Length: 192
Image (cartoon, rainbow, N blue to C red; front, side, top):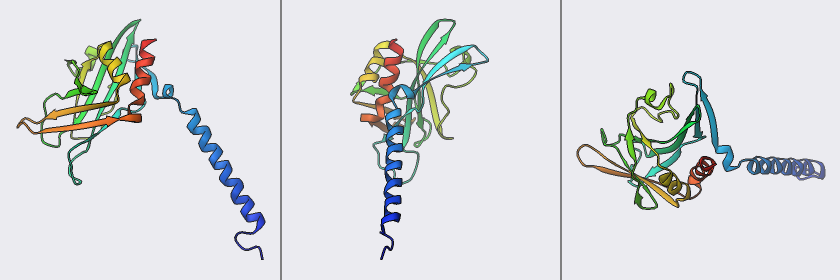
């Protein structure tokens, strides 16, 4: 009686299992932090833009119960036009509590001194935003990113973004651990 667990069907199932496991291992081993850094050419301005493949997703510390967007995003980028390079930081946060003021970014509990810059992309010598706005009710900001702040982000154990509504309501979003690996990869890439 061979049934479901007979010799041939079981051997075929075992062979498929090992093939899938091997393929998953190859995909996992091929993904390196360097894969998370992308260079794009803005054809309208002839500016090369270096970005992380996926912005860092921070999650709210406030219980929402399904109301509002629980995510904020942070992502560095670098522009290079004819050898002139500049570092920037893109930040996006949901307007769960209505309009919000510019947020504060903390790196391992320390507030980073970031200089806000206009959202006018032409001042960054770009025709297209480096990152897409994640939602219809999200605000976004651009900051100059000093090398010291990038080094902090690249070595951070945790980052937080604090937003404040116009009526003083506060919300805090955080990210820790492996989620921050693209920041380290970007800092290493930018140092070269």
